[in-house]
Length: 196
Image 1: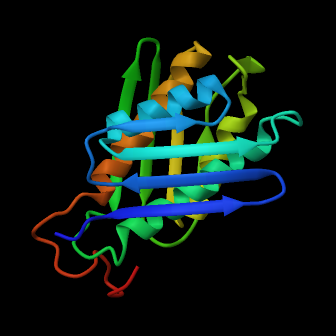
Image 2 (image 1 turned 45 degrees about the horizontal axis):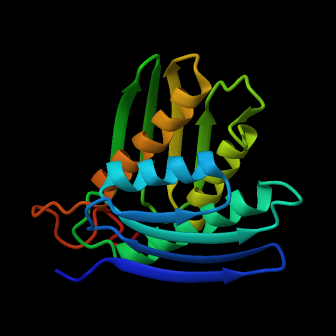
Image 3 (image 1 turned 45 degrees about the vertical axis):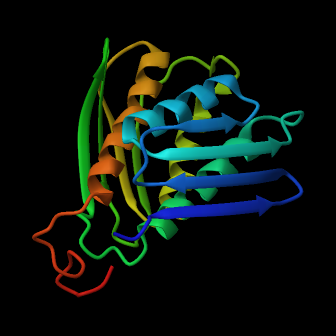
């Protein structure tokens, strides 16, 4: 089996990013974005998806967290797309309903080559740690467009913002792991068009 990895850099006047991703890893991660709660979420994403992820972001946090989080999402999405490669033999679809204490989150995705985000998390605090809660949507939007995937994230239950956000990252990880997994019954790509 070909190793499904990606290494990327993105340098702008707002952020400098280095990322390496192994879809077939063991959940190891080294992450620094300068935003503690965001780092915690990305560590959880790697661990629960069993992805190896190294990510270093140097962003303009003196302005705010927007560029750091959005650009990290763009690069992560592009890395997933590159690591998946030609998509031959993968399940393409992934879905998970994941509980975390009071929170219950649904994440479904399709690695179809068409970007789309449907997002419904009911966050009622301005921040968790130093992470603005409005940036959670921006992150997943950036991932969906960078990765050219349909991504649906829905809150089914919950009231604690920390739990809701963490469950969303973990549900995304589990759904992505499922979608990128191989099924020996699939020949070529899973599409009647013959391409994704």
